[in-house]
Image (cartoon, rainbow, N blue to C red):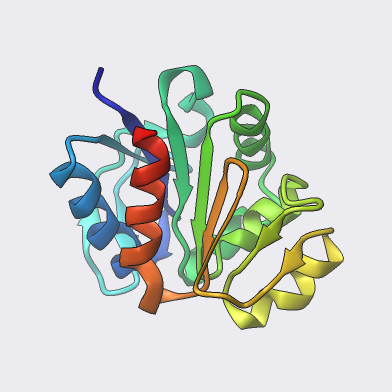
Length: 170
């Protein structure tokens, strides 16, 4: 059966490299990728690429996907205290589905409370926030703790994507 993953992007200023590179790797492995943003209105990347999300965040349901990836970038800060995003993170956690985040995006998961007692990595500016929210921050390139997979920054997106795909296919 074909695996399905949803990428959560910010409506504005999501990081191009964190969406398009991993998306290409996932699709090359036959994974069906769905893009969701706060609304179904056009979303604009940090570099000005405009895309049409297929779903709005409130429409995302864990039962429809095998995993979820939160895409970082300056716009991801809009999701730090977003009720719908927190709810979705918890739904995926409760369902035992894979949850991924890179660079800034692990802070979204930390604020949702899903990283308590989890070994994670993320952008160094978020280290204190991750620790304050109960995560064990390592600063390593990629961390896997149960169903949570995190990447430090853009330099490790390929490793992050391959790791996520490996666990998705396991």
